[in-house]
Each structure stands twice: as structure tokens, then as C-alpha cells.
Length: 396
Ligand code: AMP
Image (cartoon, rainbow, N blue to C red; front, side, top):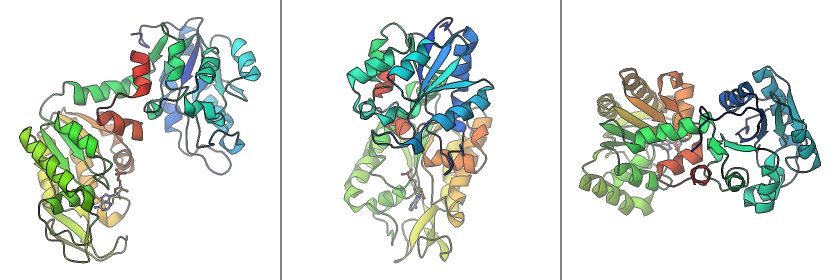
């Protein structure tokens, strides 16, 4: 397999799938450019080698129709500022303008193609559309981890037209390497921390992790289903009644595999799902009627913290409580701090999949985590043990 470091892009036109799906305000101004910044090492390497970069991405959900409110032009302009070099723009990702501008592209130049999802063929993974994209470049680089779980034209199908010239960009490679450090052959003990609202969205993740971790911490709303499944009183907490058997099966599976399972023993409870609710603290399995557990309590924090601090490898997906509301963020803050502390003592930590990433960013701890993933849905499917089509297309 080719790698960024061993490949020379000299004289080549690199067709690069990136994730420029950045949030913007009503005027098109980019409000958070972290995704654009994340692709810069890959673009710079191509340019420094003496190659040129043709960047393709989606933005928003135009649903297969041209919608200039979702044009990539303002993002291309912003990228030009970040790179400190002019960035050219093609008004469509295929067709005459794209063909002419890519043909005229010189070494050291960057061109951004218009939003791929203006064409329904992108999400349909259409062969002819993929071929048309492939004809724009000499080598294909996939650096868009966030869409690696989709078999779209630009993320997967296009790769088949580059049998000898396809590779992962630096960002994608870093994501793959990080998951490898956790699920491949982790330094032990390895502890997985899974939280978030529902068991239903994490069943496969839990099952897969039980196969590789030594300790499994379950927090967040989903913990209530486990507490109830084990005979506890959960009051008005979020519980998925139809998953009580599944929760019991997961507990048994963990036992059978010798995985130490941690479920909250105490909780911060509230009389309504609101920032200004009355709050109290009680045992996790004795939540009074009408009250709901919205965060883990201090005893749970202590137990979870101890498990985290004795680990050499940590994976964290999903918050411990309703961290968007101040009264219920202590559990998530404490876990984020414990993961950061373990990392500074030499553990490898990966935070991936949506809200836990938002949490470490919000609490200013992202710099103290070994790797913070950029892909929400893609990371979740990866942690489920699925082969992601965008990764398989390069490896195959
Ligand atoms: P997920 O997208 O499944 O990772 O879930 C994240 C969401 O779970 C966040 O919006 C949290 O507010 C929510 N959450 C965490 N703990 C609880 C809880 N105890 N009860 C209800 N929602 C929760």
C-alpha cells in the first residue's frame, strides 16, 4: 500500500476527497474551520512535492440539486487564507469547467471543486459519475474520515479507477492508526468508556468492545437501562424498556469474557429535564418516582476514575450525563479530566464519536488526549467492528 510519506506527488495532479463540510453563518462565513485546518498537512505535502491538489467535498445536504447557499466557494476562499496561497474554484465537480481547470492546473496550485452533492450520483455511488471524477486527477487520496462509512462516488467507488495510485491522506491515516492502537493490539489494561443517551445506538459498539477491553465503563442515559435490567428503580429516567434483555445479555457476555463492567452506583437526579430543575443525589438503583438520573454521582466518578487511572489504553465514546446543562456536567468533566490525567501518565487515549468530542473541546482538554477523532458516525461504525467502505476501497 502507498503511504503519504513514501509517495512523491511531483508532477502529479492529486484528486483528494476531503471533508470541507464546515459550519457557516447566514452570510457563508465559516464559523468553525477545524475541518479545513485538519486537511492542511495533506495538501501541503502534495504541493511541497511539486504536485497540484484537486479538492472535492460535500457541504450540507443539498439532496442532489444545485443550491448555491451550500456552495463550497466561500470555503475555498477561507482555505486560501489558511494555506496562504490562491485557491482556484470550479463551478461544478464534473463537466467542462472542472475539466478545463484541472487540465490547466500547474504544480503548486490548489483547486476546489463545487459541492459533490449537487449531483444525486454522488450519494448513489454512480459508476459513470465516479469515472468522470477520476478523469480529473492522476492519483486518488482519501482524507475524509467523516464520510468513510459511506459508499459514495467520491469516497469509495472512484478508488477503483486508481488501482495502482490510491492512498490515505494524513488525517485518515491518523484515524486508522488510532483505532488500531485501541482495538488492534492495545497496551493493557485497556478500558472503554461508553456513554450517551441510548443503548440502542451503541449495542454493536458494546458487543465489539467486550471482545477487546479489560474494563468497560457505562455511563450517561444508557446506564439507566442497565440499572433497571439489574433490578434497580430508575424513576422517570430515560430507559429503553425493550432493551432490558439486551442489557442483561451484555452483562452476561462481559462476565463470560472476564471484562470488568462498571455501571453507575449513584446519580445526580432532577425533577425535570431542565437546566433549572430541582436536583438531588441518590443511589443509582433507588431513583424516586418522578425523578430522573441526569448525571453520574460522586461515588461513580471515584470508581470510574480509579479504573481510568490504572489503564494503559483508553477509548471514550459518549458523555456521562446531560453535559449541555451545567448542573449535569460534573460527571463528564471528571471523566474527561481522568482520561487527560491517565494520558499524561503515558496511557494512549482515543476520544471518538460525537458528543464526547464536543465535551473535551468544551472543557479545553482536547490537547491532553492522545487522539480526538474527527468522524462521528464513521468512528461509531468503526468501533462496531465494521469494515468502512472508504477504507476498504483503498486497502483492497
Ligand atoms: P449520544 O449521541 O448517544 O452519544 O448521546 C449524547 C446525548 O446523551 C447528549 O446530548 C446528552 O445530553 C445525552 N445524555 C447523557 N446522559 C443522559 C441522561 N442521563 N439522560 C438523558 N440524556 C442523557
